[in-house]
Picture 1 (cartoon, rainbow, N blue to C red):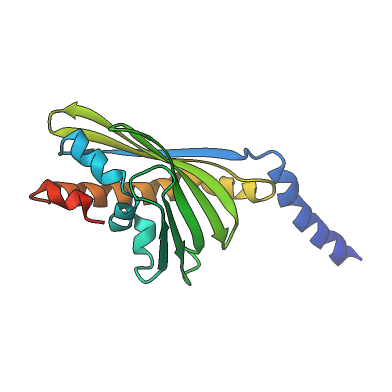
Picture 2: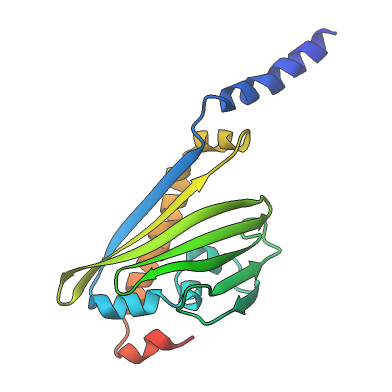
Length: 184
């Protein structure tokens, strides 16, 4: 009987803790890219280009990809499916574009865990040839999955965003022509 009580207490402690843990999080990272704002934005608005700099896309270069709609426009969907449990299955949709400034996405995760997150990328011109790119994620984790927020989602997701932004910067700054931006 004592063993059952101990097991119940061990199971109950995290479930009670999850009642008091926040359920939402926001993570944002930024980087300076030495390219004009219009060039950077025109590259970012094509969702297929995300595969060229995102850390998550690089985790499984052989993942199955499917596209629906017209890339660079609201409603375009990029779906993925991977055997890699860190990549899983899901899709990303362009939900809103403020031309030259901001792109809003909805991420719909199917496997290994179901969930929805909002993501966005913004560009701000600092000078004629310098652009700040912000990449952010807003999400909610329902009880009891919100317990994972105790494990510093800010750092885990933030590091992945930073890696992607560094890859983006390297790609954009090492191109000799603007023609590559439409290479979908």
